[in-house]
Amino acid sequence: MSNSPRNPSPARRSVLRGSLAVSAALTLPAVGAAAPAFALSGRPRAAWGVQVGDVTSSSALVWVRSDRPARMIVETSATESFRRARAWHGPLVGSGTDFTGTTPLYGLPPGEQVHYRVTLADPQDPRRTGEPVYGTFRTAPARRRDGVRFLWSGDIAGQGWGINPDIGGYAVYDEMRRLDPDFFLCSGDNIYADGVIEPSVPLPDGRIWRNVTTEEKSKVAETLAEYRGNFRYNLLDHNLREFNAQVPSIVQWDDHEVRNNWYPGQILDDSRYTEKNVDVLAARSMRAFREYFPVSTLHGRSGEGRMHRVVRHGPLLDVFVLDMRSFRNANSPGRQADDTTGILGAEQLRWLKHELSRSRAVWKVIAADMPLGLVVTDGATDFEAVAQGDPGAPLGRELQIAELLRFIKHRRITGTVWLTADVHYTSAQHYEPERAVFKDFAPFWEFVSGPLAAGQFQANALDATFGPDRVFVRAPDRANVSPMESPQYFGEVDIDGDSGELTVRLRAQGRSVLFSKVLQPGRVGQ
Image 1 (cartoon, rainbow, N blue to C red):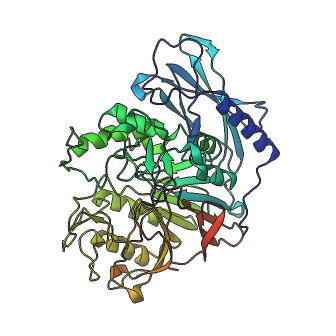
Image 2: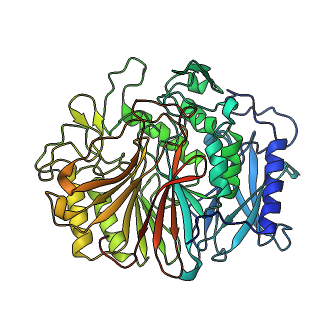
């Protein structure tokens, strides 16, 4: 298996040059601009770029944002010339969705490069159209031998480290784009709705970090408009827009899409918030998330508003996207001897068991927005993730994970790998029943990566309940190290079509591979 990036075909390179040129030609709305005005003159513009999400072997979702009411039109083609293009008439975008729209594409050819362009048309005069915006993506393969390669990470614009023009903005996205993956898995914390972006931040070495700022990022997000502004903020970065035009995404959420360490039913004791009911804040964030990301369950008739889903990426890979936020119980010391709600909720756990048991993919990636064996605290006595620091038998949320791990072993479900972010460093943990207190499970690996554009933190302690061994870790020795002081982290997964081997590489910005592990297919445990 090669450790070098794929080389896009000449046609793909050409269309990407065209798409990026169009992006550069379209000046973004003024920083801090609110929703578009209805009185704008001229033709509709798509200055925020395009995105594609939840790509399968035959389908995809295409996203765009207009600067005024417009009809979304998508054209797809096998070539950059757009000869014999197929047209898809999308929604009428307006103020009800913050002028965003998503168009589903069906009946696409498997394992092929798809070129697309999005045009926005005046609803009153379809002949008045804006400049098209271009993108490209690969559909999932129908043949095993084609292989799959993707990246994952999370944690964007956290701890006050926003878009810094002095370092080229979110430059890590440019590096990831050049690796030309089949897709990108974002493991949560796409925004920091509770994180203020100040114009400048002093660094320990005397340098000054400068941020692009907006009105919505000047306070914690509470209103729908403020949540929308948080999602818009990251799209001000040209690296991210260019990445989106080339690399489709699978997106999940975690806590900072709403506020730090939130859980359903929580009532805030935080003077920064006038709205204290977290359920109200979460509903507003979910609506903005649905508007700003192309996610299948958020746009279809079934599962409306649901985050957890399976994205099937050909015979080699199924991605099980978890929601470890919306159905959890309250953060607590985690010592309950009986806990059916846990971190997934009873219904999501049943769904996950069912989908894992029916999966025929060689590899089953469980995309978790929080780690399993790392102790993540919430205040002095409560815990935020699964582990609670007690090395004994499973208690609290650990009971639900123990049930899932037991199910995977007894059903002999092969090829499970856990990927996550959240803790703002990168590491690899191997879980082994011989080291564990709870022993009724098969060995497995959990890989952690991130952040992409946020502060880095020290490594968390391990909880011995499931027998983790930290095989690799790269973390700073102090809290909130800025992206100017340390490279950002992302992971790469490469599944070889011939052997079926899965290789995980933990990468640091700057094209360096920190750690690599090859896993063999067809095994219940590794």
